[in-house]
Length: 129
Length: 357
Image (cartoon, rainbow over all chains, first blue to last red):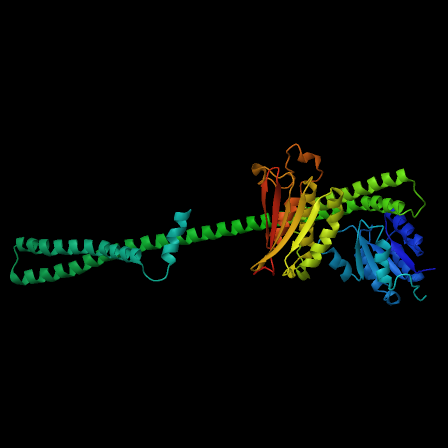
C-alpha cells in the first residue's frame, strides 16, 4: 500500500477522476467534499499529502490551507493546490496560504500522478507511516 | 473661460510688468489732470475776479488770503474725491477678483469630485471585469477538466482495453477538447491583456533551449504535412532577459500558423542578434496574405477570410495576442508577405529588460 492522499474537491466528476487515477496508481484516497470536512479528515487520518481545490463552497481553499497549516500535527504534510483559477496572483496566493505547490486545471491525466509524486518525495517509494 | 483665467493670473505674477506700469500711469493721470485744470483755472480766473471788485489794498490782501485758503480747501476736496473714486474702483476690482478666485476654486473642487466619482466607477467596472474573468476561467475549465481527464484515462486503458474504433473516436474527443481548451485560453488571454491584468515575469533564460522545446512541439505537425522545418540558429543565440513562457507562446503561435497555412515547402525559423535586440523570424512558403489584409491581421477576431483560409479553424485571436504580448515584452512583430508565395513574421525583442519598465 502506497501513501494515502486527502482529496478536497467539491465537483463530483473531478473528485471521481482524481480518485480513479490515484487509486489506479496504488494510492489510498480519502475524499472530502468541502473545506471543513477536509480539515476534520486531515486532523484525524494524517494523510501523506493533501490535494486541495481552491474554489470550494463557503470556505475557499486559501482559508482551508491556512487552517491546515494552523495545526502543528499537519505541519510536514505537503499541500498541493489543484485549481482552475488561472488569474494573475493565484499561484502566489496559494503559496502564501501555506500550499507547497500548484497544479492548474484541467489536469493532464498522463502527467498528473507524476506531478503529485514530485511532492511526495521519491516516486514509488513508500513513505514512513 | 481661458480669458477669465488669464486676467487674475496676470495680476498674480510677481514683479511689475508693462501692463501694470501703464495702469498705474493712467490712474495718476486721472487724478493729476483734473487737479491741474482746476488749479490753473482758479489761478487765472480768481485774480481777474478779484481785480473787478472795488477794494482797497488792505482788503485786497485780506481777500487774497481767503482766496488762498479756499484754493487749498477746494483742491483738497477735489483730490479726496478723485482718490476716493480711484480707490473704490480698485476695491471693486479686487472684490471681483476674489469672487472670481472663489468661483474657480469651487469649480476645481467640483471637477475633482466628478473625477473621483468617475475613477471609482471605472475601478468598480474593472473589478467586475476581473471577477467575471476569474469566474469564466473557473466555470469553463471545471467541466473541461473532467472531459479531458476521463478521455485520457480511457485512452490509457486504465479502466480496460479498447478496440481500434473506440480508441480512434476517443482520440477525436481528446483532440476537440484540447482545441476547446486552447480557445478558452486565447479568449482569457486577450481579455486579461485588454484589462491590463496580464503580468510579465522577466527572468534570464536560454533562448536556444526555448526554441528547441518549441521546435519539438511543432515538428509532428510539420511532418504530418510533409513540410521541411528548418531552424537557423546563430551561434551567438544565448541568454535573454524576458518572460520565457510568453516568448515561447509567441514562437509557438507563429510556427503553428506558418505550418497551418503552408501546403508544401519549407517553414524556417531564423535567429539573429542585432545590437541590443534579438530578431526571430518565421518564414513559410504558404498561401501568403493580400496587402490589403495585412493591417487586419493583428486585430482580435479578424481571421483573414479569403475563402481559402476559412477552412482553417481558430479564434483569430492568436496574432492579436502575439502582437500585444510582444509589446508588453518591449518588442514588436512585423510581417511581410507575397500572396501565393509565403509570409515572414519577425519578432524583435530587447535582450534585456527595457529601461524604465
